[in-house]
Image (tube, rainbow, N blue to C red; front, side, top):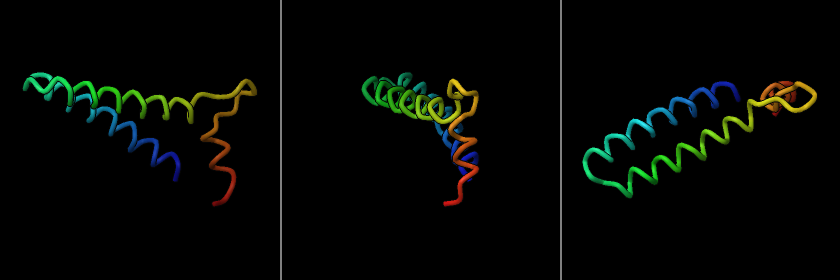
Amino acid sequence: MITTVLSLLTLAVLLMLAGAMLQWRRGERRKAVLLVILALVAGINIAIWTVPYESGVAPVAQAGDTPA
């Protein structure tokens, strides 16, 4: 389940960056910057879940092992 959520979040980051590009071209600079900041926050969240610890195990792998 968590891998599906992370995959959707990755797609959302790409869409947010595309939306920021469109807003920038339309002259909506503030909206574009906010979309980029939101994409960065989501991207950092993805990195937190997928980058492994020093032991070599990623948090996403540990989350898959325990039932909800």
